[in-house]
Image (cartoon, rainbow, N blue to C red; front, side):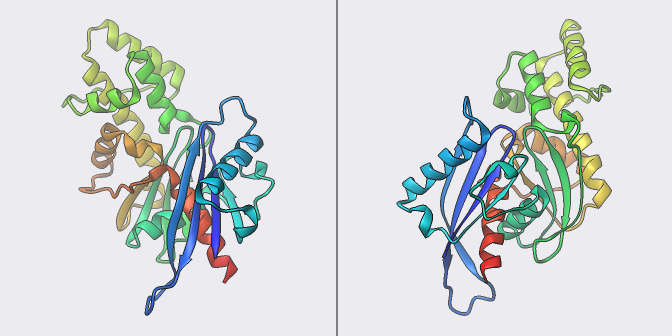
Length: 269
């Protein structure tokens, strides 16, 4: 049996195909991740982007649509995936995918381009509580991206630069526009770029941490979403949350798509 999970994010479309694998004596079903694919929608409409990504990943896997048992979709644009069997929330998908990768994980932090959220999960990978910032980018990747542009740095350079600073500079602005003005003021006052980068990522981490604390920090902490790739943010988040370790999956952008495919497979049973 092969199932598909599609995550229709605000900027990208992610797809995961799962094939059920029989493991003798295993206490639960095991799955092999067959293919993943990501594409910037570009000039395509979201529904067209979903169609193209799905066809591309099937072609790469040597499969046809008839061979896929079920297709579940999540993300901000999940209702636009017309060929999906069912749509599920980002919290449900993210919690399931993170729990599969880290069975001991109970606190899941999801920070993508436009949204950030904290989730508490149970042993079955179900989201039992969550808090998010869906109406403000200050706790998401686009906030850090906007500030990195103000410093004329790539997002990776921005994250790496923050690791070279040991200064703590508070940022009071809660809005991207006002925060950019604050960054410009720091530049004009000859504040080193490393210190500004750390101040920005500390601010993002602080807002994300505030969301997570609303649901409680319990057990292993798992970070998913594109901000996993920003080493400076990961360091700032660890400090804000007061934890020694945050588990980072190898394919952080695909965790919600993975969760979709897992739930699709379980529903078939």
